[in-house]
Image 1 (cartoon, one colour):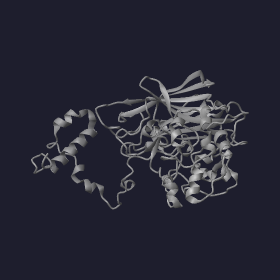
Image 2 (cartoon, rainbow, N blue to C red):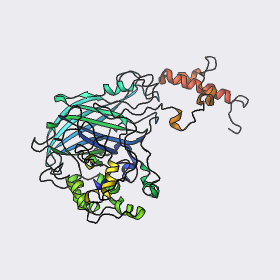
Image 3 (tube, rainbow, N blue to C red):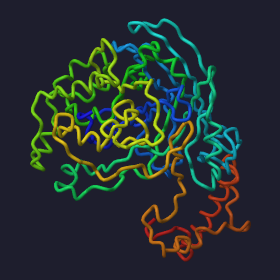
Image 4 (cartoon, helix red, strand yellow):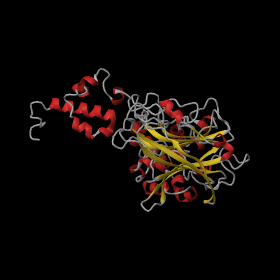
Length: 485
């Protein structure tokens, strides 16, 4: 837990290693696992990908990669190897390739003809023993993905689209894939020499307004645990990418939050993303001799706890004894959850540190403040150095849902001028003026519109309006635009 302090690059696993930072479609950002608060006989796992999705970032927006396997692993006996693997693979479908538009009109449902670009996915359950496949089961195929939230004009009732993307599986399980508000909350200005060198840079949720792509899975707890006598599971997520020869290789890995940012130095980050839990002994020194406490001591003169940090090894590699440590555990980095601990009606953001054993580091709920927990523990909370360190961001900017998939709805692309820093007194429409006026039928270049008829009515309106603006702007220049062209 103490090794999970603020990350190096962006957040949690947002752009945490040199190679993965250049390929966001494959980048795990966060992993959550908790006993479902409204269905306590089930466990919910939420895994997120694609960091820093700007809501208005069209026209291609944010699809899952088609050449990737998005995997959720479950170790249910503590041997550092996965016994269960839930694999998601995606396909993209385009109705009209002659338009640049993601949607050609208001979208009322996931099968709406105006939703031009859609995705579907298959879900497979793979059972393993000693990393060899024992059995495969197709749990679902061609399940629709909730689209990126283009804006209010395009998707006037996005909540309805979200609901339609929740798919019921046999045996009481549920699955969801689609865009969501990034649930991680923190102040990322930690990278400015740990909050400005004097804690002046705290209190701003840097991820406010950004989205991610979420995969959420809710399953009966007895489906993933070894037995009632052994209710502890270890969970991690990975991304495998297909190469030119058709083979898949692992390019991203995530279990506990914030691990690959500050625990591992630059030389180990890409190696960690390609590794598996049973290989984690190679990173042990990064845990027993962490860099972050030394940085805090250098900047804030808070003495770092004595090394080696065996207190971190117990939490980080084994789980807390008596809480979420499996019997006969093999040390390895995973998000460990004791599924026999029932959810509380009033979760405490500091989880176990505040006496709430249903929270982090016993799994991770959406509301758990992993930054504050990590800062306090890295400075010795578990070895007698009590403190109240934190980044002054105590909750997410959006309220989480009370039912599956629990993540908040994504921010829409039409957030308005205030979201972009435009003064509330500014009339944006008056600035654009005649450019917003549709062209008259007598002035429209019908040949150009006819050539692009595949774009549909919306494309015609845009092209016509643009030609009208160009003609007015070039009057008196002989139709050549600016002099010299």
